Amino acid sequence: MKITVIGRQMNVYDEMKQLIEKKLAKFDKFFSGESDATVTLSCKHNDRNIEITISAAGTLFRSEVRGESFRDALDDACSNIERQIRKNKTRLAKKLREGTFNPYPEESYDDIEADEEEIIRTKTFPAKPMSAEEAILQMNLLGHQFFIFKDDQSGDTCAVYKRHDGGYGLLVPENE
Image 1 (cartoon, helix red, strand yellow):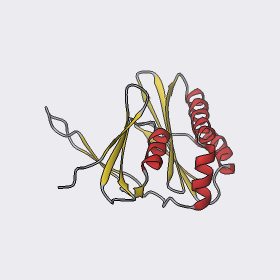
Image 2 (tube, rainbow, N blue to C red):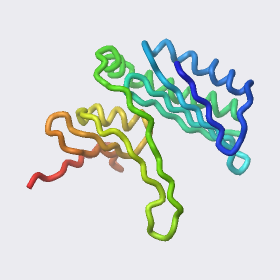
Image 3 (tube, rainbow, N blue to C red):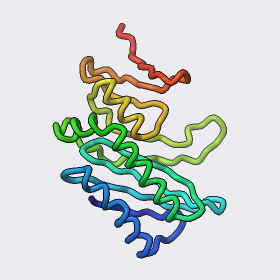
Image 4 (cartoon, rainbow, N blue to C red):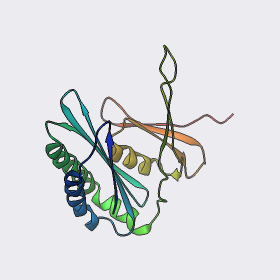
């Protein structure tokens, strides 16, 4: 697994990098082939934040944890990702074995200075063809409330979202 460690407005020491590499090495058993992990560390208001994003065969696993120390946050984040993998084990095993996903390129962000009612950040992403079920799986793995994707049947850009009642919704554009 290729691991990239980023410190936001801070330096990350070699000791911490080695600890992160050691903790993330246990995920190699789940992924055959190339996988990438990005670990972002930051400090906000005496809290230590750690965000781990693992991309394996086009499937993203993400955890963001706040703790009193980076070690505690790292342990919690690794536990969260392992729980995601185990929870979706059969579906993920089938997808990763079949190689149905193409690896995602790095997401790009354009930060813009914020004024009233202006767009603060623009995020671009690849809208790859997939079924609604695959989109729900990706949304849950990322921990998001919605996920935009290209429908593999119709080619339309659609969105799935979590409903307040615990179910899921699907937004499909009307064809005129």
